[in-house]
Length: 315
Picture 1 (tube, rainbow, N blue to C red):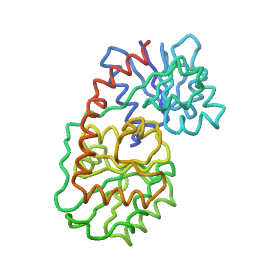
Picture 2 (picture 1 turned 120 degrees about the vertical axis):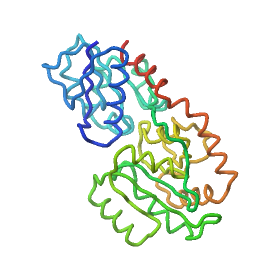
Picture 3 (picture 1 turned 90 degrees about the horizontal axis):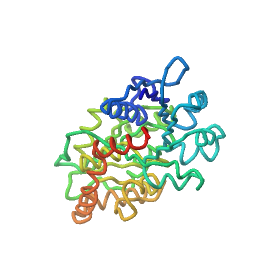
């Protein structure tokens, strides 16, 4: 088929939507389909099917696509946990789509029951060959996510006053924060945080390969998001074997499972600090996190994602 893949993330952007679009296009092309990626669809782009990422932001393309074609809409975290509840455009996209893709199974619970028959789950994957090899002297924690409110990116900085400078058996704690400054206020907070807190380093936006190397060299990754559809960076951590310290939200629960031990309550820096202290100082607890992450590696394998995507998008 000729497939129009529409994503609001344009060329050169370093965010989850763009990585997803490029990866999905590669899977579809490998299966013999012709795929064109664009930010907005136009009638000049002849296509048998459209795969649109983001119900609200891709709404104009979704609405313009001819009724005779196959229409698949992939729902992001902001779609599932905000936009479909507030935006008439997002809700119309749900109605127009013949198939809806969600990135973890709990997302379907947010949809009206009559629409759930359209839903297919496609868990994102990572093809990285990196394996977990944390640094040896300090306990390194990384945070990977652009500086925007949905990510609650400064929670890691707010938790540091609740963690002592000495963290036996380590020399101390090191926080590496990666992400583009999409919010000027949050950027100022990150810069001020570096000036007063020697354990915290915000490195801004870095190439994807470099971000994965930082991830692989960390003892744990913190994801403090307020909403996630099924974070690509969590899937990357699972593929590499890095324990995840995650906010207790549906998007994280849907990937890591309800029995996972590494959750902290949303927007609770004291709980996050306690979790970091425990992971750093309690070898048994840290080993439990590693053992819970290990069996999830196959779930985020490229072969599994490709199979689920082809089933969902080429019906």
